[in-house]
Image (cartoon, rainbow, N blue to C red; front, side, top):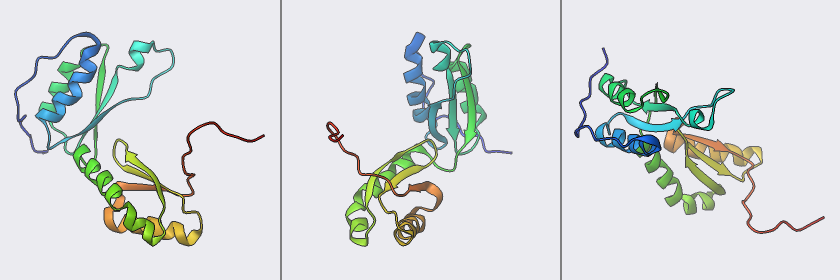
Length: 169
């Protein structure tokens, strides 16, 4: 039987209409910080209206908590829908890892790992590096795996982002 984790703050009064879409994720993360991992819009299905496309949510939890499910389902009345998915890390954990990538960038550059971007997704931190040779790809992937395990996905052979008009033929 999964442990039941009680909310750490009282139920908020949720706004009506589209404002509920912004209020619920913040309320869930405040009430259930030990299990809340994030919230995202789920993929749309063919034939949905613009309102329906933005009405499917997935709550990411570290452990399934029936109280959180009850709270989320009552906050998202029909036609809004909510589903639950177990994730190994919280949003706070992923943000901490992303911050560490940023603070370690000078150290990585000295080793020959050229990070051109990083950011959080629903369950991992994605890191883009320009390393293309087999040896430098191996170096980059091993460096991140040793420090962060499966919390990071490394995309290799990425181009440095450019800004401004493209010149050429």
